[in-house]
Amino acid sequence: GALVSMAGRLMRRWCPSLLQDLHFPVVQLHMSRTAMRASEKDFENAVNQLKLLKKDPGNEVKLKLYALYKQATEGPCNTPKPGMLDFINKTKWDAWSALGSLPKETARQNYVDLVSSLSPSSESSSQIKPAAADEKLPESENVVVTSEGGITKIMLNRPTKRNAITTSMYKEIIHALKVASTDNSTITVITGSGDYYSSGNDLTNFTAVPPGEIEESAKNAGILLRDFVNSFIDFPKPLIAVVNGPAVGIVVTILGLFDVVYASDRATFHTPFSELGQSPEGCSSYTFPKIMGPTKAAEMLLFGKKLTAREACAQGLVTEVFPESTFQKEVWTRLKAYAKLPPNSLRISKELIRSTEKEKLHAINAEECTVLQGRWLSEECMSAILNFISRKSKL
Ligand SMILES: CCCCCCCCCC/C=C/CC(=O)SCCNC(=O)CCNC(=O)[C@H](O)C(C)(C)COP(=O)(O)OP(=O)(O)OC[C@H]1O[C@@H](n2cnc3c(N)ncnc32)[C@H](O)[C@@H]1OP(=O)(O)O
Image 1 (spheres, helix red, strand yellow):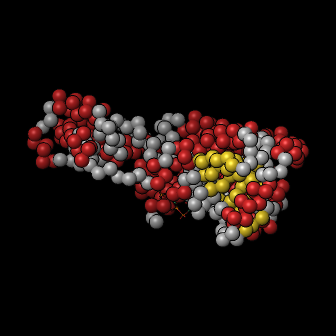
Image 2 (cartoon, protein in one colour):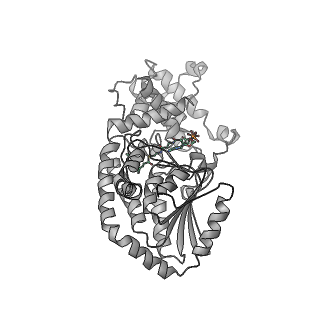
Image 3 (cartoon, protein in one colour):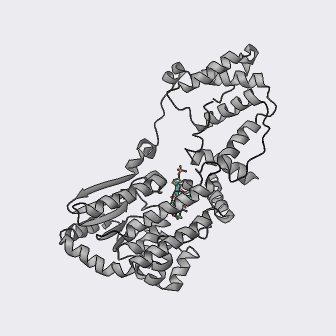
């Protein structure tokens, strides 16, 4: 119970989109003004005033406004409690239910007061809080694509979240690969900005699911993942991973589809699928045993053994490891030289190396995505994600 209620609170912090559908309402209850008793007309005006707000008051405030609105119009919460996996409705239900038997008139007044505290005058006088570095960036800036000297570089650029990949980022990467496959570049590189290569799938992808749409979302996620991995399987030019730091989950599994993997000696390789109640993806159920042998692959994919860069290199997942102090310089010098090689020759040679496997990889990818779709709906997966979220709350 404690975990579930904590998860509700954490959902609000973790899922900026979670409460976007909430009817706008505010938080500070001005009890001293309840004696004034807002009329129904005042209440109606406040509801309309809210629609004119220029600045989003934030999810916490919207949640309180929602609860007050329900209490003012319907009285104490009288609907059945939504299930623990119905995150959004459960959060709304909790907020409304927390108002207990607060009289309708008081709720109405509190609602009017709260809206009035959000009026344009208080909006303009309130200090504008600077957004966190990654929040300032439009979604498209989380994946930065540049092309120079025959190299197209796709950089995961969400360092404050350890370059975790959101659903939009999956789509942006698919698009970037599509463009890179026909642009003037000779080779394509994927890397991360900051200390991490990437922490893999953004775990809030699993929680920001609209109520009643869990199965549909899992289905769409399966399609997105399949398309994402297919764009690596089908990529026609040399594809190089420049693994600048720790790598987790999906960004590790797809390494088997890259042509060359360079890693800093600071990098680690971790696939904690069982811990998350999930299963391997990125064709790793096939490429990992093939690359490193079934028993080494099992240690990684079943038991989540984290490899150092040198271990990953010894097992064939990484091409070469460089000391962190010279990593960028050495790698980019080498890549600039490779990018001067004849592009058609590189393409044709890659086709020869990879073409025999393509059909098989597509079939494996499809199967892995189908299995994962089922995993995402499982209690094991849901509770593993809640565990991760609650673990973070104790930090
Ligand atoms: C039903 C709908 C499904 C939709 C699915 C779409 C398609 C899915 C395809 C899927 C497949 C994927 C498999 C995977 O990739 S599984 C791997 C998932 N990743 C993880 O489990 C890693 C989780 N993170 C960590 O363990 C740690 O954060 C870390 C990476 C070891 C770093 O630790 P740290 O101490 O250095 O930093 P920390 O304070 O924990 O994190 C800093 C901030 O970054 C946020 N963050 C980190 N990783 C993630 C993540 N994966 N998802 C979301 N957010 C992440 C973290 O929350 C911190 O943020 P804040 O400061 O608290 O705001």
